[in-house]
Length: 466
Ligand code: BES
Ligand code: MN
Ligand code: ZN
Image 1 (cartoon, rainbow, N blue to C red):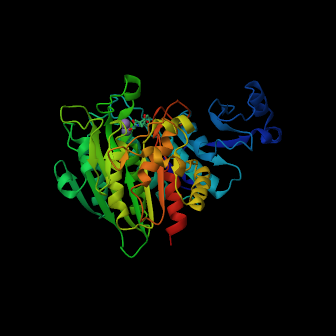
Image 2 (cartoon, rainbow, N blue to C red):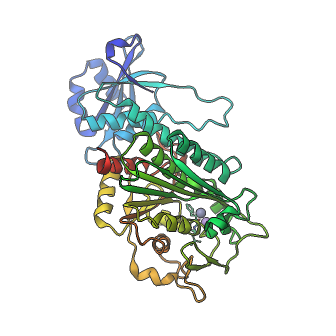
Image 3 (cartoon, rainbow, N blue to C red):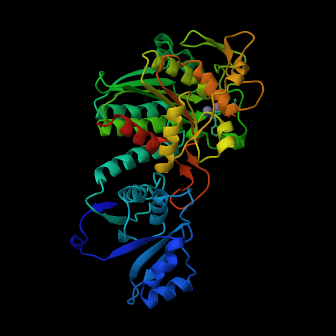
């Protein structure tokens, strides 16, 4: 929790947090009371990254907290993750940051502080009730930080919720709730309506599930403003379809709607901050299930665009539901079209779970997003839409296949497939993200991780905010 109050306004004890780079430790230590110097030595605290030292007062209460930042030139962390990782390890209480710091460091720290207090405790009978409060100065915009935190928590809750409790209908209902609370207009197509409305691929992928496939199309903002359109992959569970996944590959597939969750979180932030853009959000939501009416390997689907696709693999379902959504999005030539999807395992082989793969033909945009991602501790990495591989999507009987037979460069192939459905958008970015923390780290529990949301919000603000 963040408290916007002057130090004197608090009745209780406020513990100071000191962030220390390894290089600064000795100089800092020399200025401390001998008792503190001895304590630091006793615990061999050298300011190593994420190392925490609780310093007691003479009365045995908590006097201060030291947090190591590691070496000054190490890029991998920043104030955001330092703060997020700190709150897990501190006792309940009131805290404040000590020492000179830039405004951006303070802001990132305050946001990370909130972010680190997220818990997915829906199924816990005894939830952890700990609250660490951080006192911040007037220069910190607490409402903005809370809106980012709320949007990210929504995305995390959606991704963490198992598929028995997050059907396509429930996912779309969450998006509808967000849309209505900001006065967005919407259209919702359910089951057979998808066929009449021209979303055959969404229907084909989702029709075998007991829960009907859906597509949500929402719009918000002044039509005079620049058009920003978000598309999110909403596969609520990916069994692989008839090309069924092995158990290990299926285990985490409740998170296959991570792209939709991130797109929705970003949409909420855009609307909440009243960004002067004309926003459109398109979410195809399905379960890729197995039944007698499931789509099959070898089937040919006629897409919304008119192009026919041979289904080389039913497990490449994300690109199939996205292609009809992208055709709709692209039809009105948005200024910026962004799709977010847990599209390929290959993107994870290439970059691991922490770095979403970013694809765009706009080199300048790619550069800006990479720089902002590092600044916001929400990184992405640019991979190419290599034209030399485009012919691998060819099919003998249809206009294209949904997979390549080569098996190489799967993340690029996924991007190239989507690119076939985008021609009018002035800029297009495809983000192939993981949406999940694979290993336990301070502030990053194993579970949902909404990726690209903070980075994209920072970008849209820099570009469009008045
Ligand atoms: N949802 C998966 C991609 C995925 C797998 C994301 C694991 C994160 C972790 C996607 O629908 C899929 O199954 N992709 C296939 C594509 C292949 C059949 C061309 C894959 O990556 O194996
Ligand atoms: Mn799949
Ligand atoms: Zn999938």
